[in-house]
Length: 237
Image 1 (cartoon, one colour):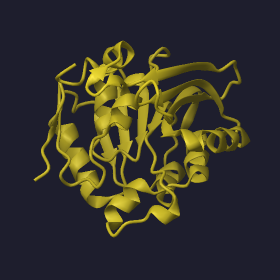
Image 2 (tube, rainbow, N blue to C red; image 1 turned 120 degrees about the horizontal axis):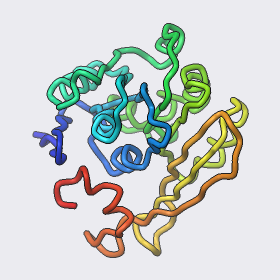
Image 3 (cartoon, one colour; image 1 turned 45 degrees about the vertical axis):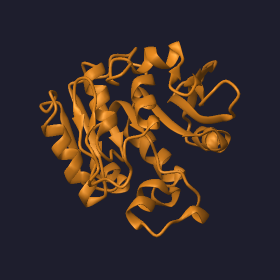
């Protein structure tokens, strides 16, 4: 039995989703900049809906729309939205990104994505988990092409990817004329290697604001930066 994940203001059921709630989604959701006061938000590959729920708590966005292709994850996302305090602002579509991008004429002020990113040779026996985790389910090219079509002119696109993919992803993004504005490198501890890159893109080229986020100094001894980022969400922060 997979337990629901209890946050301070909402609960996320995750038993039907291949990818359970992990640090990546919470990091991205809490790191995303709301400086431009987005009215409309799109969450690509929503899974449980965790990113959308975090943004619903953090922002005044009128419309937060999520996209999920897997049947069971879609149903769970819809249920999580309905049970949340923000069910009037949250909506999930059951479609592939390509279908959605082709059919939707609207653009979004903010697009968020925690994409699948494990390479081909990491495949397991669990095809649902693989669909959630592997890059061939949502190649970076397809993701960026759709983001560029769906992002408003002044909009921001925020993503979390492995640090090892950062250069490839930013070079590819530049080919679609979308550029890094802010990059935060995430490390588990001060001595650990950089594990993740949080990257915010926009259509305008500017100097990149670089920073580093260390999660803990010792086991369960979290850094002040990490606590400040997540304290409105995690029960024990």
